Image (cartoon, rainbow, N blue to C red):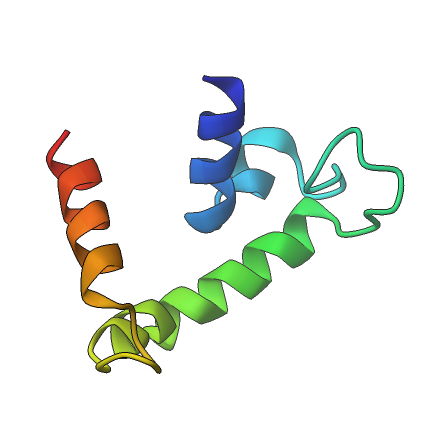
Length: 78
């Protein structure tokens, strides 16, 4: 559950808000030097630019294959 919560905070650009701006975006990974603030700025830009939505609108191979779309749909529905 902690890993899932960490991922949700990251992709929602909320790490700084809840964990502080100077913390590391991937604790425990010595090679990672990305701060929570930098991670938030990156993911907020992706959200603002609607990158995921634009990629999802594209047909394969630039967008997801039909099988991937179906798997995600099933995951979201529970």
